[in-house]
Image (spheres, rainbow, N blue to C red):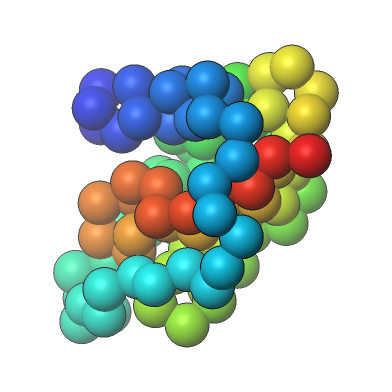
Length: 88
């Protein structure tokens, strides 16, 4: 989970990834990371979650980063690593 925390923390340095639909790889549901585990990792990385849902083959989170900026993050359902992120 340390690599995931580093990846999530690194998102704070990314101003904006291209605004296009997220393209997450399809995985069998039994391989998916538990939503509660990913939510906890996001909170540990300094994010405040407003909404967390499944969007196609991605986990999607709306909230704020540690600087208070609004973020939208699409994450791989198995690794939890960000696939796309938008920062306001």
